[in-house]
Length: 287
Image 1 (cartoon, rainbow, N blue to C red):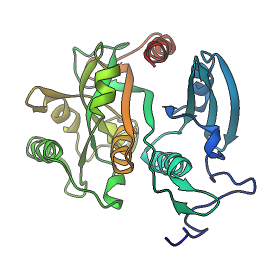
Image 2: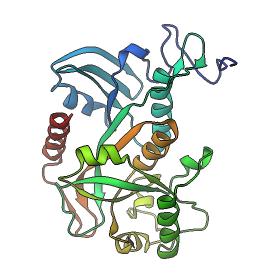
Image 3: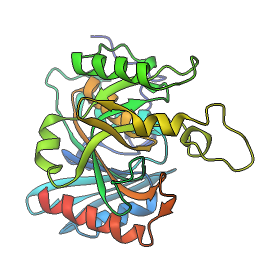
Image 4: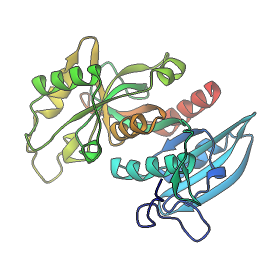
């Protein structure tokens, strides 16, 4: 097997993966991702002890222990472009020999849980509730850069989405699925459904400040969408990338979103920090 070129797999002066600035023994097999770098400490404060901290650009990592389990919390920043960096580099840490720059024969599967915030697209999914994403539909284009095949559920979901939702021909949506193992372990007490991943916070999510929208009816179409018993519950900016790359790389991924806004009702949480705090505690107790 030929070594991966230094331009493709970038290693820094201490032998760590470039953007995350991490060595393989500086992460656990369970990874919690958060968008906001300041949320890392909100998770790691519940660790029994912390053995490693790193900070490079917007990527902060704390690795420690809860009982006998080694856990890392990593900030990704916003958007699937950052997810592309984080997931490729996390995978490289466990599945590529960084010294020899070769892929390992024995592959490791990480357990990755996104804890984030999101806006609801259903009236009954109120602020301060939690959504677990069974599926994600990406309108952000990331997965189109990778060779992949849809399974039957993803094919059916995507076909139904295209038939019901009036979306610009220049946007090519894709469908991805969460880990059934992770959903069964963590999601029983939450709202479950489909999450839309957008490439931006304002226009792509139907917000109007000073610019008009190319498709002002999109949010209404998303709220009215149905696929069997599944509805589109929420939208945010990372889940489709997490599910798509996680599945391609062989990791078990789950996205959990604290609902801080209800777009149909026009409401915003009065205590979004406490809602997120409760979600963090709930997940760490289940871990």
